[in-house]
Length: 252
Image (cartoon, rainbow, N blue to C red; front, side, top):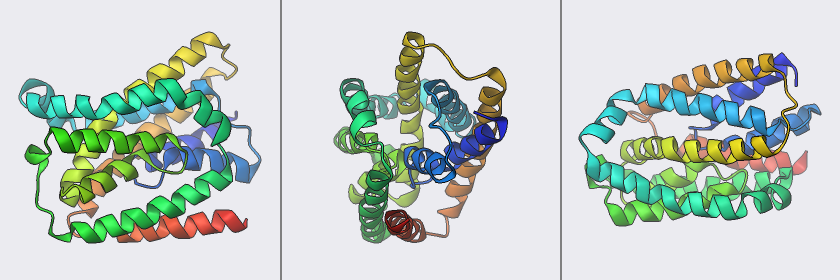
């Protein structure tokens, strides 16, 4: 992997991890379109660490409150994380083998783009805030997150969609998704680190540093942008973009 490729893929990871457009899907499609080798597990682990650091920094006040004051919200996030940890541990290898293709990504873009569009339309009158998420909704969002193991689904997209259908406001569904990303991305990083320990590292240090920096900066900017964007906008345009991109990938 060259430094240029690492920078590009780091930017892609940073932007798409938190926008509901699927980081895993883009990290499959981009190398395939440009004829690059699929990035190593070492690189995946490093950019996940970068996005984890970005979300903690961007939501630092919420994170501090989460661990020091809002124990109920913390318990909801833990409950929502358990399903994806279990299913990820059991089936991640199978997903990598059978679902890592442009066609799967394209269909996931389309299907979950349509679902996000209807969830966004359905949520116009939703008022529930972060204090009203509740255990049942958290568990439901957690099981929805399992679907994101399939490339092209989008972890943030599917959890935001589940939150919208569950009655959460756009801002609440988005912030809960971002907070849920902290243990989820950490768990993904641990699983990838285990794989790295079992297999030798084949990537030099400079691309890893370049990928980390570009992923961290773009993830931080994306989080702050989206929280501001949703104050006056909806997810409709993003959902339409997903669908159009999915059809474009199918015909390419």
